[in-house]
Length: 232
Length: 189
Figure 1 (cartoon, each protein chain N blue to C red):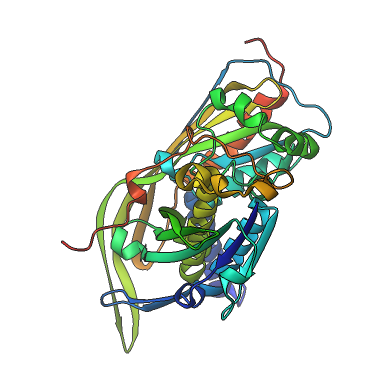
Figure 2: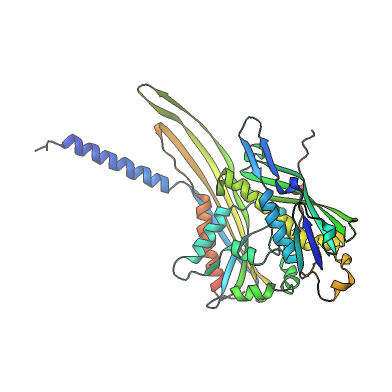
């Protein structure tokens, strides 16, 4: 026997199927990731030691987004085996004027001179900063195409068309060991992805979240890089 | 070393107003922040520091040097103009230094630069952040280069030499970064 609410149930099932397919598609917009690290010195971190994540100076042409720095810091500090991350503004303020965009050391060669400045080594020790991580890179739109038109009238509105765009998130983290005053190595994340926006009445965005993927990948890799005492 | 600062009225009440063509009007009030910044900065740099209030005469004070800051130019760009998602601020300060006899001994221009992403802070907040970064940039330059550029420490009188000095170790400027982006854009065409 066919139940009375058969058409309603049918609609619900169809709706669920559409939502499932769309959700799946949204989660699976094409993303390609490459994570690499180069270790130049032994690493490791003791209890109470902390890290600071900074963006390379914009005077050097760097355009790393504040959001990305925040994301990497949060990811490194979160979860099992999370490291102690000191907010970069707190660090920069405590050491003013030595880590301003114009004055921050560009490489580890300047570290011994910086550490000999009055108060610098003491503040770094007091805060327990062991590693300084310099982020470089950004997310760019590298291509795109398609077209879409939307219209609205008394009876409703809708869109029709198809658009796509490609993003590339390329970031590199250089790790400075403030104990040895040397570069411990670099970790890089290169994530590219294509987002799609098909529209038949309602636009359905299938977004490739390259930046958040790069953030997560870089943070996980940095955690491993710092904690793992592997052969160089 | 005993130093006083005199803030001219136009510095104290500096407000920049600009209508970006076809877009919104921006009003940036720097007066109070500038006064606060320079007072805090010089207060940390010199052991004896006083601010000369309006109507006071520098000749009534026993000081080694008088500092008079001013703003030569303030410019900013919004994302629509730069075709990026960034707000940028350029401030050109000028610092004049007078000795105890009131003779001008230095006239030092400082070009400061700051930028901030609009996506992070939103329009108003991003512009404010860029201005703060430019002011911090100026402060860093003053700490690192003031003595070299103005020779202010040479004005220290013999009676204050023994017990007062610039408490900040004036560093060399070999690591100071500069870029073309710092240059105030030329709108003359």
